[in-house]
Length: 319
Ligand SMILES: *Cc1c(COP(=O)(O)O)cnc(C)c1O
Image (cartoon, rainbow, N blue to C red):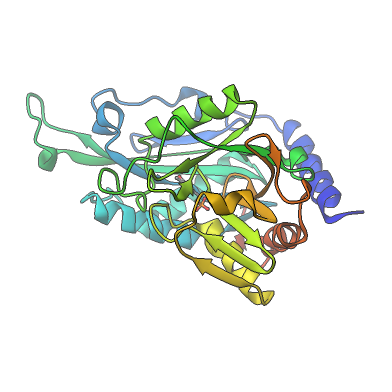
């Protein structure tokens, strides 16, 4: 059996097993206003600036096969994002960590998408001074989300370089802060769908590619390239680079000109929500041979294998 079909079969078996579980949290759990609630009952306080102004940051770790993957790397990035936004999280990181584990335990999900959001909070009545707002924290755990459905990974997805939208410039929104100012990304998704593809790749307006809600890699022979700036420093990107280097391939973090996407042997995207996502069609033309290439395939396999590595993951006590 191919690594692809064995991963798919095992995952589908776990999803089927989960579907037999009953209880208020099996479809998801949330942490709102300091309380654990079933996902369907979670609500947002209207006057939180997180909602009114998208003044927030967030992070998304994931659980795979009952294990949290690189949770501390995600929490460290969340801390850096909060610091850059001058947001003081309302609870220490160690407590956020425990809260997330408790959410997963409540859902009993073996494969989960975990979202933790720190917002500016609400300012006192009648005031608009951001310094007076009290930051708030929210989190939720739902079944694992695939930006590119797993069944498509074997043949690869389709992407476009967007023509109608460029990535919000770093001078307007620092892209190293994981944020929900998604105007450019949502517009990109609509353009991708309009042009018969699924995934937008946004240029920076200066002739380079940046990202979507995922990082982008090109492969030319044994050289991998991914943008060095104007993007989120993805945890999956980090893992992909570590794997590539250990294979003896060259990894270059540098400006990636748009033109180099069109003569690439392979292109793949990376995100916690979907892992390593092969792109075999770009702007309605095949990428390289139009099939998932050997470099992407190897990184894909090793990426999922690493989810069982005790140095990068730990087992959740489902109690
Ligand atoms: C979350 C995200 C990514 C991927 O980051 P990971 O840490 O690998 O999940 C890339 N770009 C943007 C804009 C993102 O929001």
